[in-house]
Length: 347
Image 1 (spheres, rainbow, N blue to C red):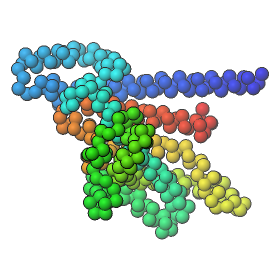
Image 2: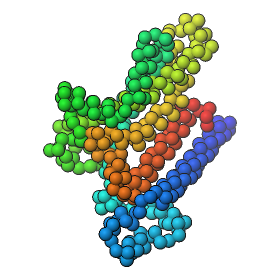
Image 3: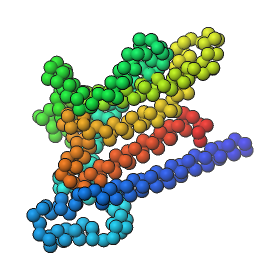
Image 4: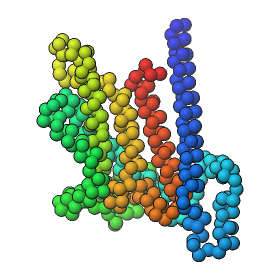
């Protein structure tokens, strides 16, 4: 009876958590919709003029304005906008003359692929570096890692991208150049997931896989460098706080091996705050890769958003902004779930 009651309480607790997750996510997304909608209405760009051009007559302008629903009250336009979004309609891009949803489905996987490899580099290198710097506080190892992290904060992304191309592509020839693949490989793989590395492996085309990887490794490594700098700095800060605790001193006095003191007693408690750091860093890579995508001619959402802004393509701009905001919401909620997995006390 007691066991059954405990199970029931656990199920109810998870049910409440899931309901709260759904409610908060929905309200946050509606707030994001409101922000993107009203930003689209206050920016000094006329969406009608973007469609009809500056040589259209007044009658043509008014007809397009009515067709786009911009003659209706603002509140009615907002609810129509929300209804369209929940039906998967983000409008049509002026730049490409295709639905914005189709454009985003085409460009977002490219950014996702690059940012995912970048965050893997940042985590796999940044976390050990941060732990090592904290364990060797004040030594030359700590100083080098701190300077390395400082460079990640201060070096401009576009400059580092250009230097990387000049050195590793033009100079040494270790990596491929701009673009996602060489031109003669473009279009050979039909999109399945949109992730070119995955799709090429799924169809068994290793030649396209290695070519795509050679194009991806440099921009992903540069993104990973910026992510690494942030993750290493925060890991070091968390670890220094943990290593100054009394239970760490007690463990050392008892003769616990140093590696166990650092990686079990010291590192284990900081996993939860590190989830937030890694999640925010990943989301930042997904939305902040504009300069890297521009330098490397990478056909991702950052490049798409830049072109849309230059062409005053508001449907594409708002659609891209909405997707990026939704990614932030999703990653934050995934972080909340991981909190509960790693620390059941947070339930």
